[in-house]
Amino acid sequence: MLTQFQGAFSDNALRWLVVFPVLASAALDDVAKDRFVSHASLLFAVPFLVLSTFGGWMADRFSKRSVMVGVKLGEILIMVFATVALALGSQPLQLAAICLMGVHSTLFAPAKYGVMPEILPAEKLSAGNGLLELLTFIGIILGTFAGGWLAETMMGREAWAGVMLTGLAAAGWWVSLGIARVPAADSTKRPSFNVPGEIWRQMKQMKTDRDLWRANWGNTGFFYVATLAQLNLALYAQQVFHMLPTRQAWLQAALSLGIGLGSMTAGRLSRGRIEYGLIPIGAVMMAAAGGWLGWPGVGENGFSAALGLLGFGGGLFIVPIVSVLQHRPSSDNKGAVQGAASWLSWVGIAAAAVTQSALSAGAGLNYGQVFWFCGAAAGMAGLFVSWTRPRAVPDMLARWRGKPLPAEPD
Image 1 (cartoon, rainbow, N blue to C red):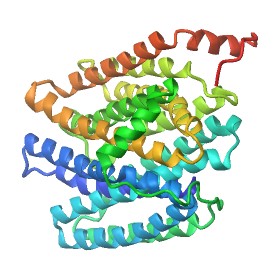
Image 2 (image 1 turned 90 degrees about the horizontal axis):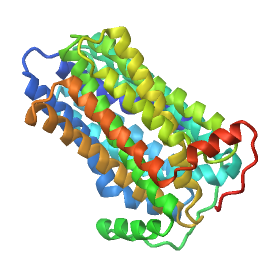
Image 3 (image 1 turned 135 degrees about the vertical axis):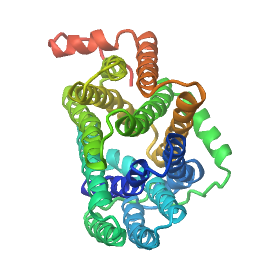
């Protein structure tokens, strides 16, 4: 969890260190800023689309601990490259560094999520995921603040910001040495470099398990909505509220803290089980928050509160889904399933980057109306869960009241 915290912090510190100065630049028009934000997100997403299945194979073929330690060692080299890019002031090289951090996260994610059911008993999986997501989003909050602060205070001295991030990467590698040692799940597993074929094979296998199949698409939808909201938030804060990077970071913090607290709450409310009833409740909160965010004339305080609500609903939504993706696959295929789920989640992230440009520049929607689109997408997800699992919320409420219910099939 500490290793994941550091990675989330450094990912966001680097991204916003690169993005914030562009958003604040008076030399670029709004279209150019929209394009740069979309390109940065797409470049971070591309490695997930190309390498997720390879990351899943690594997580099954080798000890997940060894994979994570090796990836953290690679992060040190990436941050050295980022330091050079910052020192040269080269935007293409800085975007390349963001892309390389995407490679880092691509290879790290299947091992990170796959190791959780190996070191936690099933009844503690939801609580463990809640805590992991809380620390992840605290890392995102602090990393966003750090990126804004570094962008303002290190102007003209960006290389020193890179040196700091390199030091943090070294600390993350050192912390990763304390991860529990686990054996390889399948030391004979052969890699597949046919990414579409491997994704198709995993999807066919997941489709035989109704809950695993739906969790996979729920995970993709979550990252689509969350990314679209975050991209739109950066543009809204700059264009509507005219905020400097450090003030924009407060809004990013409200969203991320909401997700973290929602995730932690979901873990506690699950009470040792995977609680499907939290998913539609979280979706309703996200839909309501999207409507609030796009309301004409909303002030900064109300906007921040709406972001917190959006994040809190997102946390309730995602924790049961992540737990299903970890719990239901067979022990020798957990990494491959995580790789396929990661690939599809980054399809959602890449689609969000394209959607942002299409809605604002193509369809002519203002930034508030894009938030309405986010809320509508979340509401549709909630309706789908309620339709396909109508007893989820009533049964959850009955359990909370202590009413005995028949056991559900695994």
